[in-house]
View 1: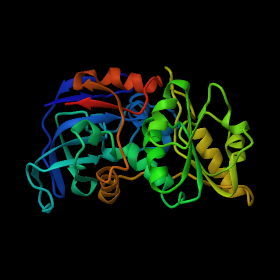
View 2: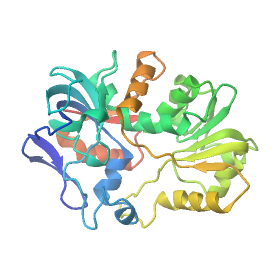
View 3: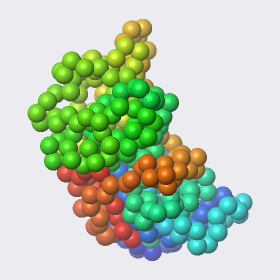
Length: 329
């Protein structure tokens, strides 16, 4: 089969590799579409260097732990390994491979507990766009946002951000979205109650506070972010950053590590949380229900062919992308 492979840090390439065979508890899927996430360029470049030490399941000292890139996918079940009775050949599914990677390929073998039936009404590209970004948004807001609570989303026009705006509204929150001028209409169309154009206004200096601040960019100081959180509120952090070339030592992990230290040492100020996103069938089922109820709509910026994955990853890395970038297979 064709797959996007990488032995060392740098640009991956299209290669011919053996088709995978499902083991016990696994399902073999014919991939119809896959999506690009920030995780892909972090792993492609080994960025930040600290990640090579703290994320040993994903990054090695000189190259990625897994040869084939990509985590999100949607496709058709071809066969199932021993112990799998929920899925049958022909079923339309979508999933998140997590640390295993391997979605930028014509076939993939995924644990049965990391896939779910594709949401009815969504095409292959839309379904592939949903797992990691949608799951990150849901885990960041669920249990923190409810009716009557205010939430600010920094990075509202990105892959996670476009889902976060919609999920914040679905949970009953009043959503303030931060984005650039060109994306104002987009985030408004997704349901944002208010939009802050960061090219004209600084959300950290508006003199307002929010019950939940969900930061998806990592471009502000911890002090700036904490000042925007209302008493008793919560600051939620989730990655961000860009390398623009040479890998950095800390990258967005500097803010996250600093936040964790501050949360342990301070008895005052807002709660600071960094949700862990782990792929699961239960999370995918929640996302499917939201999509089928019309409360979650994947937005796709561009689509690329499988051979164009390196170009697609560069597009996402350089921050020109808004919403999701998808690979058609």
